[in-house]
Length: 561
Image (cartoon, rainbow, N blue to C red; front, side, top):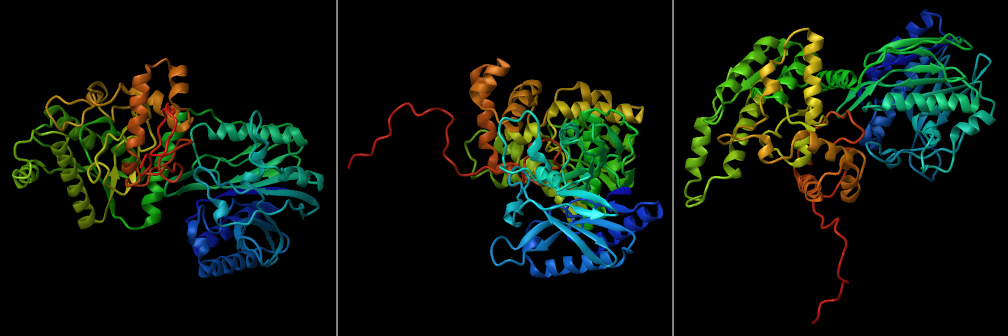
């Protein structure tokens, strides 16, 4: 049997458009000799559909879309698609996360997801009923052990704790599966592809069975999906592989054992491609903009954001705005112009000085007798935010926020100022990684897209004379090491001090900065997720809380009356 894997870029909620794409890829797969085409998890709705699933009219539309897809599938061919399906029993959640085998105008088999992830960016138990392990599907004499995403992740090797008591794959193998077939919507994160490959190789060797892995591609708001569909033989060797970050059909003949290989790619290369896809899909799928706009300061973050946006959208759609004040250095203005001209993007200069002076004049009575401090710095940032949002309103432009993850984490950003915008491109990229990405952009272009001077000067917000980031923050290489351990590895004070040998007061200061800045992050734009723990939907902490990492030294007593 010839199997095709279709990695398609779905739009959440676009039932008609997704159905058309599924029909088109099914037709192409059949024309190229496939007997079965396998699509990704929830491809009919796009992933994640979130509370759209609570709308009965939406589910009516899902069922109509599935019917239209089934009508296009002839009897000698089958398509395996992911879609929500109604739970007809009077108990439990109203929906299942399902895989439907379509052929000859009808659903000939169905299996439902057993293990429902409810952690990080996943919230599936909010909507779906967990299924009991089911039996195999059969097509053209081959027994298909169909499972959905999380159903295979309970077999990861070397983990000390397993989240689920059951292993759906064991049930499928006991039911006589000839091949395991996984429908997935696994978001991209640094290192995730190799983790997934290790998992699949281990499954294949454990059960002595091949495994077909079909993953979604494309970006939906914060989540970016890399595709990279694959087939592994029973001994774990990869025998078919799809590309990363693009739509494709990948073919494999059941029983074929010819090994294929992938070109090794660094984390920075993959992060670059993920961000490009994230910007492009956010822009195109919303359909609300005629271009993008960002503040060009001459610093590294805005320079890199401009370069990524120009590649993602085309230089003609990207507009830079220089917004100098009395504290802006001439070299920063020159660097911003050099970046814009090197990228061939349009740019304009709008000084904030007049508006800043007007604010100071308006507040002079209220601030009488007080020294200037961070308040006046924040006013400058907020004037710039107002300018960008005004241009956005007037010309239908998407405002790209340029702050990085280190700044977001430490609270080194201004609400309604540099946090204003529609999409935080670098919000999951640490400052040290920003520099790595910028070097890669230049190597890839074969020229200095980002000028050397941008790399060499000290990072600065230029909101007061002589200011640098290190006036307020530890050196970025130190800060980022602590932040990654705290945010992505969930370590706390004692563990971080022990593993890094940084002074306890320094680590405590960084952790306190992160904790205090939660109210800012929850008002920030969506962040493109490229790590295992991004700010936004994957990290949920209360703003109002009174938790201390210091142990209680005194017994708690009732107050006297």
